[in-house]
Length: 273
Image (cartoon, rainbow, N blue to C red; front, side, top):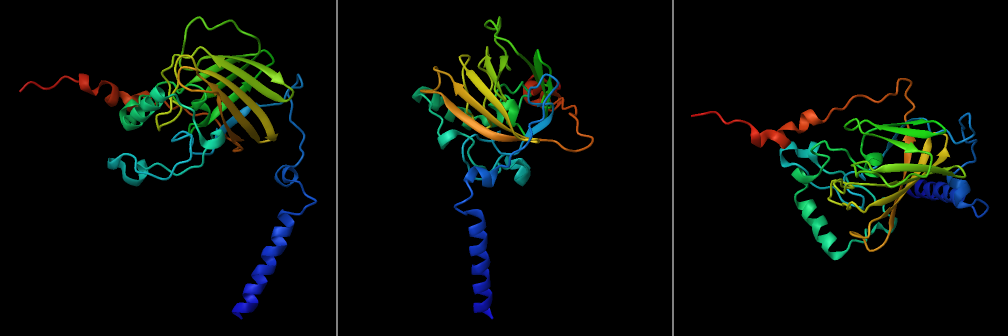
């Protein structure tokens, strides 16, 4: 009985393998089917909707094992394991910057700007574990993020350098065929890329690419350049998924109220004895 069952399982596995790895089927055909790109009235791919990443990049862009987080929260505060979203799983830090990254990691429980409810920056806002909404027009694209009510406007034009630096930078967009390309500069250098301490300076330059790969999934790519911190440009990529709930909407997450103790607790007046 065991031999017959084992043989049957082997036969099933062989059939399945033949179905998946048939020489007549290319890898791209096996993974992706042709689809009609939804378009807006001006003929551009329609990115309107509420989107969210489904990965652990906000904990660590690189591959990482599960690990303890805050001891007082037990399993709730633990870090989930995750695969890398970094091309080659390598972030090319300069030696001094790598030392700072390690220091950031050691102090992450209080130093991460996300803990203090500061704006998340780009590209981090895209892969935080919160949804964001894209509202698209021919002249500009608004992206509204649930975390800390962050937002940015992508002007569909070539812009002059930003007059002041900011957390979310200045975004200018253009279409490369059916791909939205966004050039982001003008950062203040305060944001981190994730909770593991990866960071950049005020010289950060990000090129984002948004490409529909199904009607409800976008391939998001970001090329990151910062000569003060990295020895060369590097790239991250991940799918983003559309929320399909009938009542999908961004909800209010004013996280600053939960960060007040961390930010201002030391200023509390102590009772007079």
